[in-house]
Amino acid sequence: MSLVSVRGVHKAFGDHVVLRSIDLEVAAGSVTVLIGPSGSGKTTLLRCLNGLDRPQEGVVTVNDVTLDFAKRPSGAEVAALRAQSGMVFQAHHLFPHRTALENITEGPIHVQREPAAEARARGMALLAQVGLTAKADAYPHELSGGQQQRVGIARALALRPKLILFDEPTSALDPETVGDVLVVMRDLAKQGWTMVVVTHEIRFAEQVADHVAFLDGGVIVEDGPPSQVLGHPVEPRTRQFLRRVLDPLSADLDGSDDA
Amino acid sequence: MDGSTWDLLLHSIGPLLLGTITGTIPLTLISFAIGLVLALLVALARLSSVRVLSRLAQVYVSIIRGTPLLVQLYIIVYALPSLGLVIDPFPSAVVAFSLNVGGYAAETIRASILAVPKGQWEAASTVGMGYVLTLRRVVLPQALRVAVPPLSNTFISLVKDTSLASSVMVTELLRKAQEIAAPSFAFLQLYALAAVIYWVVCTVLSFAQGRLERRLDRYVAR
Image (cartoon, rainbow over all chains, first blue to last red; front, side, top):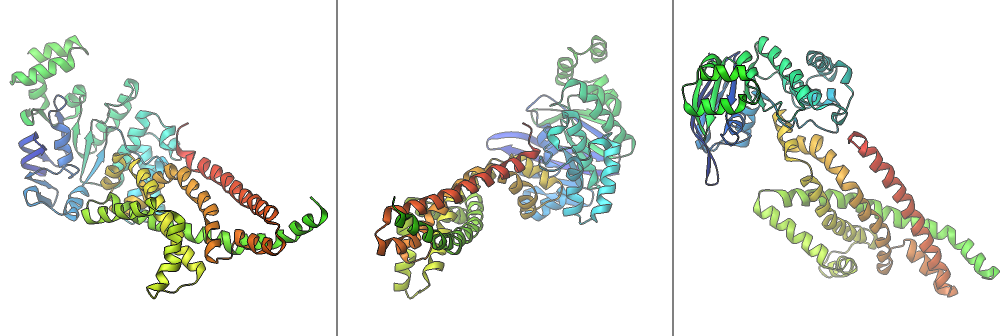
């Protein structure tokens, strides 16, 4: 069953069209990875799923909230859509004046009105899940990039959303900390979280994704299971993109690209 | 200086401190508190996407910054009674100083809100916060760090600006000095003593500002 449904989403910034009549389905409990060159619209598509970017046209459904953006939904309606998902940002956007644990409990305590002791206990469990129990009282600036991003993931999980959105969660990280974040994300996928991930980590997509969509020029050029889109792409643009991304990494992967 | 001058100064310290404690300090604190609330509202209006609000805030700031504080004080104290609004000198001065602080601090607060990255607003909204909660829990605490040095300037300026209230019969530090100086003609001595008291108050405030800044910096990488 689809948890997320996107129908005919069209988004332009001024004269610049970023998304052209996009359709997308995300099954509950599945991992969808959006790949594509920068400027292809993948981040904008992700941000349309929680209304951080509002398309001019198109219908977006997440769980039991459906918004027809052509009808200019109100702030409250967009907030209802946004409440269905948690989001992990490329630049983490942790609250710098709050500790790791406070970042996680901020939403549960002050928005969802969960009793503080309960929220803190859950927050500690989430920190354990991302391997940062010892950092509960650290401020974001005292953490490494990978640790910050894992706190960001825990913050998104704390709201018990139906869906987690990841906007290039490892693009701003030092190479040696990328793995820590990807491992946490893989474990979340195993636990059955529904995830939509914008990333350049093709290996992650190969191993974790159920569905991969390749975007270019504001359209989904090709999509399907990773074995198809990444293993046997049919569209020339997909092949070209994968070659460019994978070439510098490994000759082996390059071989599978041509197969 | 001869003995009688020392005597005069010694006997003046008490009344001048009294004027400071009952006049200058409450005038400053009350005006600054009201002015800050006003400034926050004006800053938010200025940042609002509602055109009319933004325009009104702009006009207000322009009037306050474009006219002398003494003239603003005179208008409140002398012009309002002619419109039938008669209030005592002290509350009149509070109104004038609050409006003045409101205009100046509004620009400071606006700039410090704009200094908080847009990502913080987005992150707050993805954890479910609305506008007011985002301001209170996320944006204003961070804006405060940026705003404290310039707001401290405004505050310290206000301590000294309250001396203007002496010209509209408000009993504060400078007015006390004038009252004592007039019969004895010891203007230089008393104004110098008043200056020393202003300096001490402002120095204490500068010290407090430094401590506050260090406290607010504790979560920032150095």
